[in-house]
Image (cartoon, rainbow, N blue to C red):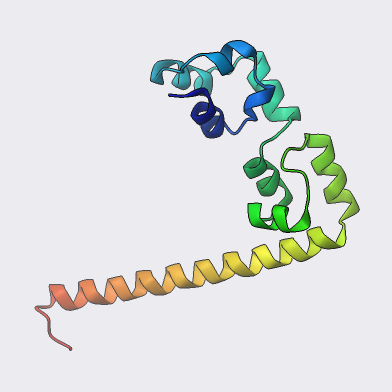
Length: 131
């Protein structure tokens, strides 16, 4: 796989990786080895960053869209993220609340869809009766 794909799947910021990682394709075996036995550079990147947008948003408890709306940096270190979480700027409070509402709504929709699917399965297993 391409280095960018491997970096995304590993949750790391590609430009912060060693040149050798950025320059070469990553085989499936190499990728699995990176996951199961991460080298020191990978452990350090995951711990201290810099982190890519997806990871920054996740650690802040907001969406990537919320990160963009706020005009916040797409790439941050762990200490920058911790600082924001401690300071709780207004944009972060608003985006966390928005993200929580969206998550709740998505959960509600998923539950409703599962209930409807169960009802359909029950009707179909009973020979279509009850319509």
